[in-house]
Image (cartoon, rainbow, N blue to C red; front, side, top):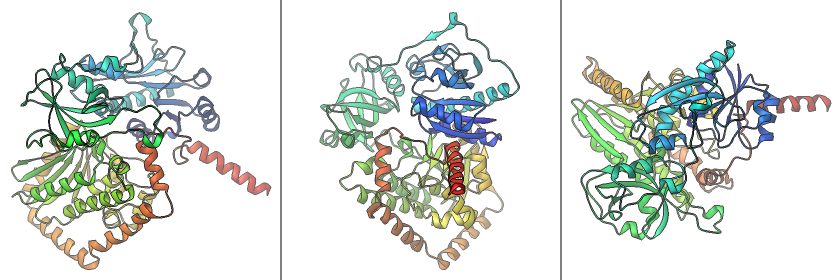
Amino acid sequence: MRVLLLAHAFNSLTQRLWVALTARGHEVSLELDIADAVSLEAVQLFRPDVVVASFLKRALPEALWACVPCLVVHPGPPGDRGPSSLDWAILDGKQEWGVTVLQANAVMDGGPVWAFRSFPMRAARKSSLYRNEVTEAATGAVLEALEKLAAGARPEAQREATARPRPLMKQEHRRIDWTKDDTETVLRKVRASDSVPGVLDSLGGQEVYLYNAFLDATRRGAPGTLLGRKSGAVLRATVDGAVWLTHLKRAARTGESEAEAPFKLPAVEVLGEAGRALPELAEGWAPIGYQRAGDVGLLSFDFYNGAMSTSDCLALRDAFLEAARRPTKVLVLLGGPDFWSNGIHLNTIEVASSPADESLRNIEAMDELCRAIIECTSQLTVAALQGNAGAGGCFLALAADVVLARDGVVQNPHYKNMGNLYGSEYWTYLLPRRVGAKQAEAITQNRMPLGAQEAKRAGLVDECFPGSPGEFVSRVKARAQGLASAADFERRLSDKRARRATDEATRPLSKYREEELAKMRLNFYGFDPSYHVARFHFVHRLPHAWTPLHLARHRAQAWKKQAALTTRVT
């Protein structure tokens, strides 16, 4: 079928649908939901069999759904209606939720149902549920709906008597009363608001939005007071315990320009002197963790939204080097359940006194981390992607000896979308070594997401495992134990050392790094400002003015036809 994806942004769900639909043989194109006229023009150009609205922030116009079947992905069960479906489910403590694929009509979320998938809720922030449970359920439901549509089936009408419309969740619903709300209530309110819009609150003498809360079960204090800091996060007391808040966003002030608009940053950085004055706590929340299971070491790292600042990269490097000194045979890098890594931290770069200097420091720190993994010859290393990866994070994984990925993971192994960045992380060594020079060029120039199975066929991944992130981790542990106990373990480790020595003698890692960074300095300090412009747009979440042609294939095809016609006329 010809499927036009219509979305506010090319987000994780839309990328996953692109991958799944393409794998099923559908002809897929995307139009960003910029304006009704633009969407209607996309339908006229592409002539789709169906429009799949995967992620919208407004209702579809009647002119669109009246001329072509429009399937809307709604993150709630049949009968649930409204723009804050998942927010309310988390705040209300629902034990089970789901995703409905319905056909658009004049009633918002009230159209007939094509498919539905349910899932058990877990204690997690909204964005995590969306990237995992919602995305998995939506993908299955959309594929089922398209099969039914192709077979000539009819959707099931919703009954108005069972409709459950819910209003837009506002800050008045999210507001925390630190003198009354217990820890569980505080966690639910922050989780229901993360990653958008956050919980508006007052902290450190300023109005801020709260994000990414974690329980601290050991400390108590006067409700609402700040008790300390650790790894950029702050600890705040509740009526019956305390919660860690890792990220904040200063509320916008009247008259601020786009360049001055606030965005999310580590909590201590937003609070400034008030945050730095807090006592540094030795124990508590940390984005990096290590555990040992016999001959296997497991190094987890869960950086918010997969972004890794200079200090994050160096902390993970140090943790890796410490783990490599432990008496294990296999060292697994687990990442986090939502993201493996998305590379350098664009937000902390944007707020730096010199974004160019901080960009260089950040990429140098990423290189230090990659080099530590590449040069580790005391253990076999495994990169286990339970969550998505992008840009430098994809090449960070290739520094390991074995790369495993969960079936639902999507990778974006390229830098071009961020102002044509050249990239580092020793990718000019790691990628061709795995896939060959020709395939390496194709991957980095493609600019399209790769599903786990597609990444495996391309050579970026060695094995894929199905299941949830938790099930994937269990399979990874078993696979790592198998590597450690294999009869050929010593031979594999010896071969690894020999290959590293040969590669270093042929061309030192330092040469790859020098050449990559020379080109990245042009990105950071050169006459072309594309990287800085793209970073600014990304950090400030500026609305799209058009859909890139590598996504809007219908427009690329139309322009090629027009160009060919013009050439013939000329």
